[in-house]
Every structure is written in C-alpha cells, then in structure tokens.
Image (cartoon, rainbow, N blue to C red; front, side, top):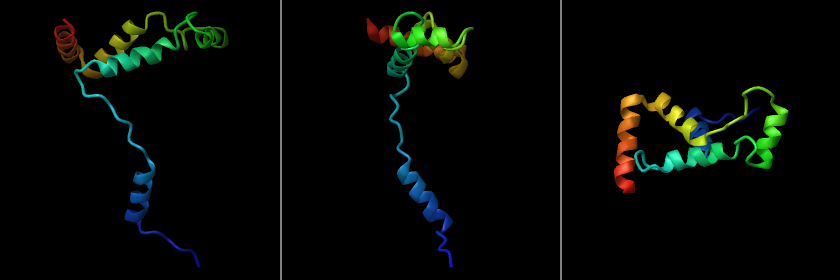
Length: 96
C-alpha cells in the first residue's frame, strides 16, 4: 500500500526546498551591474572562459563584445524604452 501526500503538503515541501533568489530593488542599478558582471565573464578574448567559448561556439553564440550595451538592450526589451530611460536617468542622478 503506497502512502500519498496531500497535494498542499507536497507543494509546501517543494516551496520550502526552492530557495528564493534575492533580487535587488528596481532602480538601484544593482540588477544592471549584476547582469553586466555576468556578461563580462562571457566577453570574447577577455577571460579564458570567453576565449574557450569563442573557439567552441563559432558564430555569435556566447560572444559578448560590449557587456554594458548588451545589458542595456536586455533592459529595454524587458521594461520598454520609456521605463528603461526613466530608470537610467534616476541612476545617473543618484550617481552624481
């Protein structure tokens, strides 16, 4: 005879196992900086991993030439032009 868990109990166990990744508050610039640093590791010719990716994956896959520009492109796709510009302007004001 098999023992079956109640569906809510199973969900609770799964949620307890899944660790939530802490994400920085939007507008602080920390999310953007984290994405740039992640993309920097995939930069072509910059690191051993970047050179290995360039050799292993001919074509455009895995090649990042300008991590900041790629992060900005991703941000514009995710949030839209107007909202991304608003976040960028707030970041520039905070920086000064």
